[in-house]
Length: 215
Image 1 (cartoon, rainbow, N blue to C red):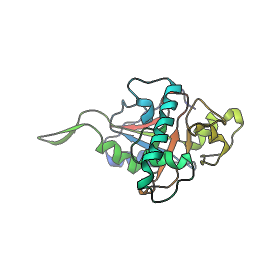
Image 2 (cartoon, helix red, strand yellow; image 1 turned 60 degrees about the horizontal axis):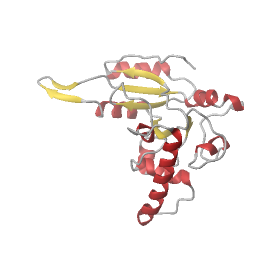
Image 3 (cartoon, rainbow, N blue to C red; image 1 turned 90 degrees about the vertical axis):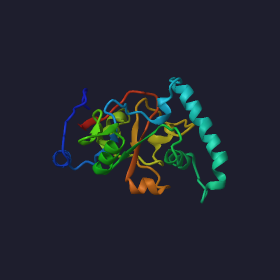
């Protein structure tokens, strides 16, 4: 894994497309668009303005999950068999979780980066006030790096994998300090439409990934 983030600047859609084509290889790449390049790669739960201790944040998530289960019953169209199902549904409705959204489609990420970027409308049209960013991560390489102490040689995780047991609310299985990449449960149309995939955090706040392009 690189010790420093590498950045590429693009100004046009053609430059962006050419860059994506030059980077793509046999391994899958995931993308996340941010309206500001200064935004850290942190899930909503870890952006709390006052609470920063991991134990307190996890306790908060447990309380939020319990409350969500109690209040969501009248609105559920089917039974949700486990906490993972609830966690992804919470993410869909904007409830703070340890999940961070990514997409397998670079142009979906680009759309979110541009449409969420601060801008103003002047005499020459829309003017962006600062750089947006599109982040890229190789989820297979990332997971193998994070889980190398287990001699992990797999790829993207699924919720039934043992390596994720410690990441569930109240989980008592294998825990890691760093985030891992996983496929989400397709329990909302938004996840399907946006080709949504996720990373889930545990004990580290540090940002990660490779800044693919800015501007």
